[in-house]
Structures are given as structure tokens and as C-alpha cells.
Image 1 (spheres, chains in turn blue, cyan):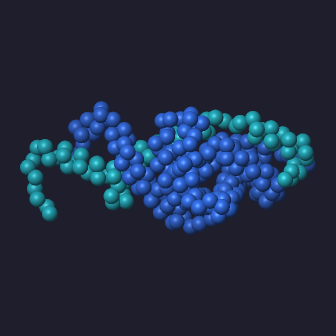
Image 2: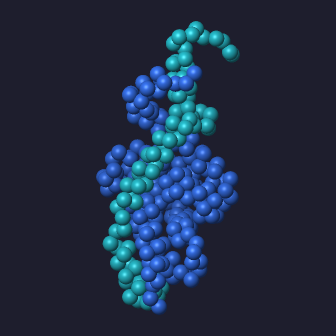
Length: 183
Length: 74
């Protein structure tokens, strides 16, 4: 049977965002692209379990996330210190990302526990609602909310330590803020 | 302690202190300013990847699978 054109379109349409999510999960572009490819293969092998009319993107995100989790668990059994390895992966290949300006932010993000990182990315960047993110991660909405809050708090701490100046308002904005503060 | 500080410079100093406290997020409650900035950076980083579009390997993969009649190739 030929692939339905609308299915093909929906899948390809989700790919850019899936890649961005995958990179934020594993911190490595090549690994992320493999993860996306494995996700697409799984999705197409199980396409009959996708309900037409529902959110294709959320369905693919769920598959990718679960696949990453099971791979990640497998790998962690082989290599202890999964988080540290993630941070190291980042440091070993900053040029590959070609985005020096995000490096500091990426590093801070890499220091978050992975459940907080994925919650923050799903809600703060992928544009999913708390409910959708909870479905993708297979947890309660309240859990997602508290993970996002903790992620934000921790990120703010991490960013403030290294670069309170760069991260805060620039001088001009600061001056405006200081002068224009409401009583 | 609720000591009154001399008026004048205190207002600016207070707000600067509050802001820096919010920046280091000791209270788990972030100022909207900090949240907005974190959100911007996160989205900028994410969109940087999204804007790369669909790498050829993925459209080729779907073409290949389609040619195979959507059979599971693994």
C-alpha cells in the first residue's frame, strides 16, 4: 500500500521540530538524527495505531521520547553517569553545532536532569500545552508543571553564575528599567 | 526587619537588589524578566535547528519506504 500523501506531509512537517527536540535530549546532532530516523521507522511500522485527526506531531514526539528513554536506560547500564556524558558530548563538539552564541545556554541546559530538560523543551520551545507534554511524557500535568518550574529556576541560577551581566538586561535596558520603575 | 531607609537613592537600590535576587532565583520564583529571557534563549536555540528544515536523508527515507510499499524494513 502506498503511503498516504497527507501522512507523508504530516510526518515530514514534524521532522524539523523532532530534530530540535532530539538534539535537546541527547546533545549530539548525529545521534539526534539517528534517533529521528529510528522514530520515523517505528512510526511507519505502526502507522495503523495513529488515529487520523489527532496530532501527528505529538504522536511522533511520544515515540521519539520513549525510544530515547529506553536506549538511554540501556546505555546508562553500560556507562554510568549519563548526565555527565551528555555534558561532555556537548563540550567535545561545540563547533559542530555551529552556534557559539547558544553554547552557554546549551551547557546550562545539559546540566538539568533529563526529565526537567524534556519538560522545559516541550512546553517552552516545541509549543505543546502542559496537557500534551504530560501525554508525551506519560505523567501527570502537575508533574510537568513542577518539572518546568524547577528547570527554569535551575537554569536561571546556572546562567546567573557565569554571566549575570550578559544574561541580564543590557546596559541601556537596565538604565531604562532603573529610571522607569513603577513606585 | 522593617527599617525605613532614607528616601532618594533607596528606591533604585532596592529594585536593583530585588532584581539581582530574582536573577539568582533563591526563592524558586523567577521574575517575568528572567523567565522571558530564558524562554527567548530556549526558543532561539530550538528554532535554529527547526529552521534547518528537513535534511534530505529523511525525505529520501520516506521515498524509500514508500517504494517498498511501507513495509517495515527493520
